[in-house]
Image 1: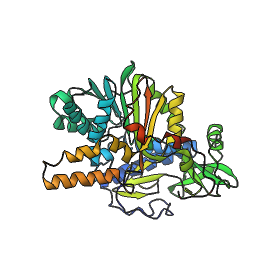
Image 2 (image 1 turned 90 degrees about the vertical axis):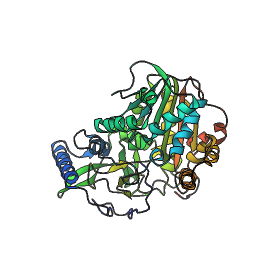
Image 3 (image 1 turned 45 degrees about the vertical axis):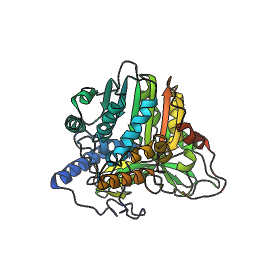
Image 4 (image 1 turned 135 degrees about the vertical axis):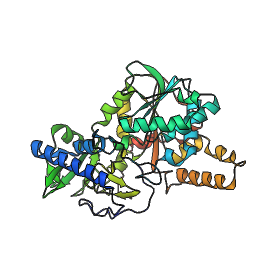
Length: 415
């Protein structure tokens, strides 16, 4: 998930908890984190060092102790991070206009809805446009978040809109036509970590050392070695000590989302890069980042279970995974031009009847969504389709799909 606060510790501080000055957790949260550490210690002693993907899966999704599993995640300005949908109602209205331009589809399926802010803005706008879907399904792993979403949506939506909602526990078994939404979803998929030492790839795994969680290096297994061997080597070779991430689970996860889709689109918004930028020689420490109480830091062993851990998305890998599922790449764009194509300037013109304070807040939201220094360039859209081409105009003009397959630069540039 993306952070908006500027308080970011020095990235060199990678020890457990270093550089992560933030409000102390409550007593209950601290006890839960300690129990999770004890469970990790026992697991490591019984089975050896964990892959980082297994560690990330446990600290984020353990149903009793994990960050998302128990609903410890805090959204909004007072929480751990701010997302586009929690910060701006304009965002949901833009997405509604895109959906309204697609061929008639039966439903919307949102995967990982968080605090349901997107749904709270999207359904009323679709009702206003006369394009309410017959169903709006929310696929959410956490029982705690599912309950929270129901409460928030029951209070915010009209009975007509709320009646279209459901919370399945798995992807639909029967084929359907619809729009599948994954907004700031893929960055939370567990990743494997790689490290370059002595001219070869090593895997960074998680061990228990001197009473604390710590990194250890091992030889990668055959699958991970094959992935590492296929990474686009930069001109001049890989720097010694270079670390990065890859997500072997991405193709499997996408295949599960795409399997029941008979006709429709999968639309993803996340922060990340095309492959040649992701594995840039100057991105020495990879893209792994943690969020705790509006602070960004780089220590995944700080307060396990009480912080978010994510990595940027390799959008080239996402496009390739879509192709392997029989999907068509509809487009790839930075957030700002995509939202402009959705009619954001026209929406701002409609705000004139409101109070000056409401207009100012909307303009501030628009600036955050559009400016390159905020979310406008950092976040990207990628759309995949099956038997459902997207509207040609005006979105085709902002498509930058060719960037997904660009070769590494011939000389070193900024990361």
